[in-house]
Image: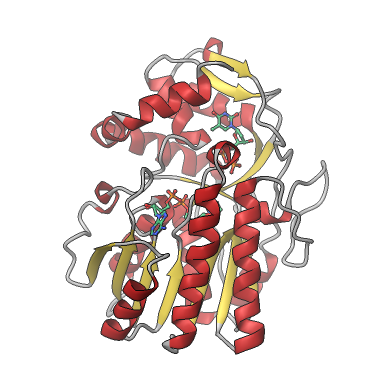
Length: 336
Ligand code: NAD
Ligand code: TYD
């Protein structure tokens, strides 16, 4: 099988490429990534030169490049990870979110249809469902009610994927997962940001009261679920993927501080994020029943693996927080 993976130098995409190349024989991956601030070839260490992997630096909005790649490789499937992925950045400037997440996805869909690519997997998010109260879970039938520019852009691309399936018969699936954590996550997202700050004895900026709830999914488990969808998903279906690990942000930060033997006095409650979704929780029953998927670790196991990975990969972390990251951190956190 030959697949076009987009965004494969980012956090989840690189973990997916690594999993596919290590665990599945005879899979050829062409990996297109624009290498934005979030894309990093070091995320592919050990796999960049793999004989079944070819990296192409490029933009998913570039229709002629996508068409050329499809002509050259005759892909069996496209798996679309490429996106602008951070809520906080979308609150500052939404334009690039529309460009990549909406127009980029449309470009891929048009090329897939035109060139008759047999499968199209859209990697989406539970954030398209909006926010939950204290009870209940998102199912695949929950209404789409995105609250941030990021989630609105992802919901828009999901609707386009659905429409291309409905109107033109493109064989699509949409996956909607909860918050991922694990190796190679850029330290703008909560878990790696808190690990990095704790390691450097810097304050841990907890938004608002810190009682916001997320369901945490270990990135490897997300990747195995996407593989199941790619190889066995029913045409046109949406699959929710969650870790069944609901935690408040303060609980997560507490676990990180305990593991790193750092004091709770590092916690700083800072001005909240505008429109902050209170709770996400996901029902993965359909994915588990239909595709035989289940997560391999509990949150307590996964977070220890993750912290240990960041400890063992100080060079990677130091590299990604050098330069541009410092001005990003200043602009986001200096005045809260
Ligand atoms: P990421 O920000 O780490 O990586 C995104 C990658 O896409 C980067 O390598 C970047 O260079 C690339 N990219 C951005 N714009 C591009 C463009 N125009 N053309 C080609 N490449 C481009 O994101 P991630 O956390 O790995 O997320 C991957 C996907 O999973 C995204 O679609 C995101 O919406 C979704 N998702 C992520 C999470 C999470 O917790 N991280 C949760 C739910 C869904
Ligand atoms: P994040 O990792 O940005 O993911 P998302 O917003 O997509 O869920 O944030 C996870 C949770 O952590 C969310 O409730 C916001 C909170 N948070 C903080 O409290 N401090 C931070 O510095 C960051 C980045 C997030």
